[in-house]
Length: 303
Image (cartoon, rainbow, N blue to C red; front, side, top):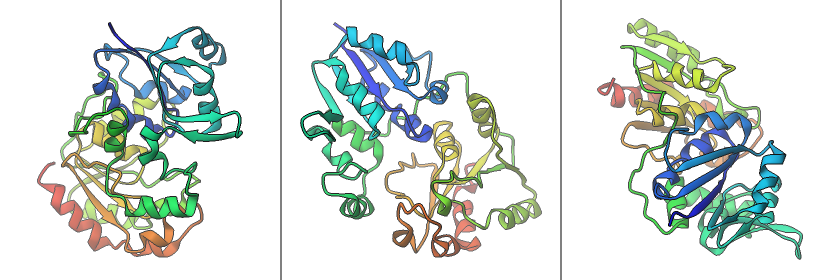
């Protein structure tokens, strides 16, 4: 008999994409996924086990889930809206974050502690959690698989089946944007790098915002190489199996599984800027053109 599985993972979009590896584990079950409205379109809508994708903003549909008994809920956010929703539903088993009404706080289950100990709701507090996160060496996929009693073995991201890589020779895509929350993510050398690439005969495309998420994915799919920070573009490139150079200035590189097709350029001042939401110039300026060029040369043979 197929189990009824509920996955709650709403943000950020890149985190939703990499969480899609869990679909491999539950391929013989029936999966409901709650996510943000904007993220509904990055999940593989023709994956047989994925029966329903619900926007967390769709309050009435979420409310209807209260009439259903889930065999297993995976509550993977550390945001109050998601955690309270998970705690309001009926289940045989819950893994991840929940709301403890008696203590009036978010907590998490023992089987998810290895991951949530590193999070904003860590039982150790943010300072210790950040230090543990900095020293950790496992990928996010490894943590996710361990939560459900499996061992991660390189299973790929799953994205909409209609989006396939269609690379244009010598077209390099650059993602020079970063969300307002993480100003240090934006390396200051992209423009100079683009000029050098064009001098070598490459065509360079800087990504722009698209109204449709799948159109943005197609923009990435058209490139032979992606150069980016720790961004959504990086996750889409990995999902599309496109060679990638990723620059890490303030977030942990170890959590990103490279699938053998990504080179990481890591700031020598990473710890000074680690998960800080203020701009730390040293972490950005310590990434040199030479460091990025060496990474490009390593993946160049693949595009």
